[in-house]
Image (tube, rainbow, N blue to C red; front, side):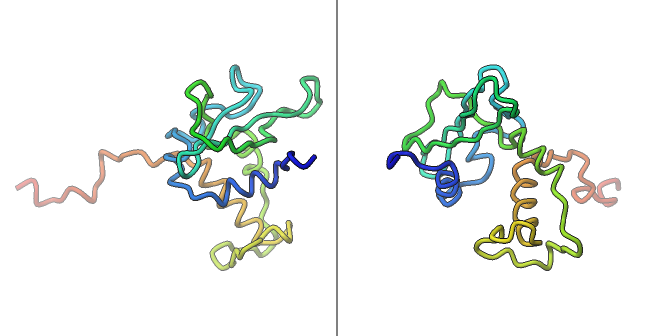
Length: 161
């Protein structure tokens, strides 16, 4: 058992690793570009670049006949760059999108006024935990801003005459 590292520990280490922007880390632009769930064709495992050019591989460890809908419940730090043959993980996984949709703020919770702190989910039903989870998931699942060709701030009425 000494060589087995819990998924939570690997996730913690991956989150602590130095990273770049979401687009640079995932190597994809759209939130759902790439594998969003292990049940998708060819997505039993997917890879996500992390800081320093290293790779984290996500996979489902449950049984094929499990009543639980498969999700990426295992993460493995590969200690090397991602293989070209490993499909990229989407920035926003199916489970992330579902979790974000179900998150409910505790009564009276105002994320703008809440200090997140070091371990906000030590109290899992706290406002700080909600704000931390919601902020992380919203950032992962947000679509990149589209370039606006009709930007009114770049034109002026002086241009016409």
